[in-house]
Amino acid sequence: MASTSIAILGTGTYSPEKVLSNDELSLSVDTSDEWIVTRTGIRERRIAAGTETTADMAASAAADAIANAGISASDIDLVILATLTPDLPMPATACLVQQKLGIPEKAACFDLNAACTGFLYALDTAWAMLESGRYRHALVVGAEKLSTMLDWNDRATCVLFGDAAGAVVMGASRNSHSGILGSRLATIPLSPDLLWVPGGGSSPATPEEPRVIRMKGKEVFKVAVRAMEDIAREILEQHQVTADQIACVIPHQANLRIIEAISHYLKLPMDRFFVNVDRYGNTSSASIPLALHEAHQEGRIRPGDLVLLVAFGAGLTYGGALVRW
Ligand code: UT7
Picture 1 (tube, rainbow, N blue to C red):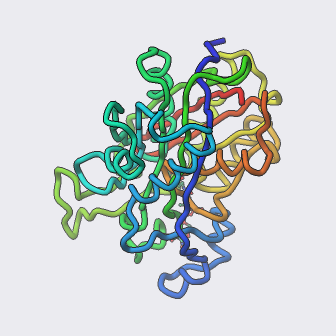
Picture 2 (cartoon, protein in one colour):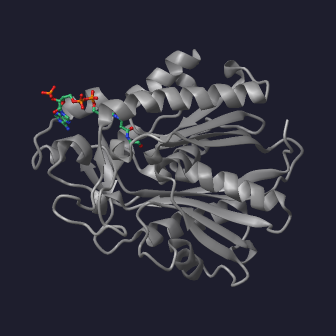
């Protein structure tokens, strides 16, 4: 097993005040609470206020994680922020969070985009940088204001996503057992149009190629299940852990049926999977840290537990991490 010296020392979250229920959504788009709940498990999602940015949400979640870790902002020397909805093309949203929280100028700050797998890409990167011994405390954040990137007339996508942020502080483990045991990242080079934002980057947004999320849901669903099952098996095998030794799986929260399918294929009962997609929908890179924090707060994760994190997203990126809490 890999070194257990780098651990998650604290977690935090932020979710906007405004709750948008399925019933409210069905007043403006041709859908129903029944369809959304049956096909996705989502009951409501949070929507950020007009003036509230990804950096605002990220900073709130990060402040929570820093307090939870029992350190102060001045102890942070690395900020990695996963997002596909940065405040600006530049500077990186991580730099805005640095300023908001008073993180010292010695800190390295950058954003990373691996879509819904972004948080696990950031966690893996932070782990490697901390293990190098050149950084002491990393703030790893997933934050999204996806409501700005939705076509509110497209019922196939607008019902699925929400806004939120989640964060962890990582650093040297404070005991002999806890730590990141393993991490694996991957990308399946399928056609980008399975899940993408067709315009608004270096190709400008046009009516034909707008800056909104488009998805071929059925195809993505199948690949997502296969990818997350594969990565979970690979990590478990590599670390000689059996599925039933996992106390809690924190899967990317995109669709309850995807999580149920993984539970079925891994032969691991649903009560080992943490689910909050019903309350937030898919918050992309915020999804895993948000779920991890809530699972911990609810006592679903205890010291010494093995926790498996798995995610997939546009790219199609996917990844997994094994953590001893
Ligand atoms: O983080 C990665 C993000 N992506 C995902 O994880 C998404 C993966 N995919 C999915 O979760 C599912 O494929 C969806 C939830 C997106 C769709 O569920 P589905 O069971 O695959 O439905 P479908 O796309 O095959 O659509 C079935 C029907 C269609 O009507 P017809 O053609 O059968 O008449 C759709 O037009 O449901 C219709 N439909 C809706 N009806 C009411 C699609 N969206 C809606 C809606 N409300 N919101």
